Length: 132
Image (cartoon, rainbow, N blue to C red):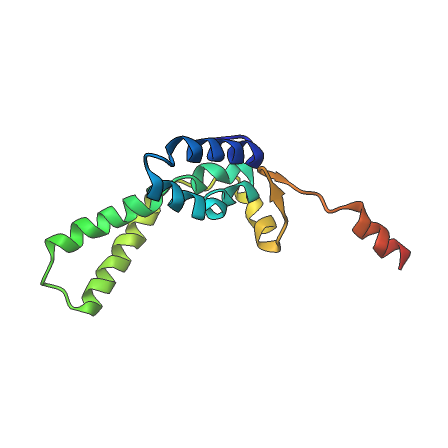
């Protein structure tokens, strides 16, 4: 929940140091996956609440799991796939909307973000363009 990636790195190191002796494998796993775990700092701050949670995945598949367990043995591969599709299609209607939807085109265009804020292109690029 740190405001910047630097603060998160410091907290991450402190966590690893604190728990590495007691939970060696878990600390090693977290340390190995440090970059993916902190990747959300490269996205707009409005999107962080969505990127920090696994709830959309868990709640969607909880519905699917609930229905498929009840129908176990009654479905072919095709009908199971169709049922899962319809369940997910129906579930998406109640999903919470994305915060900061205006930021999506920027992400698609490759605009860089650092600590949740858009990184402006440097004036060096503009100066090179003007000089040419």
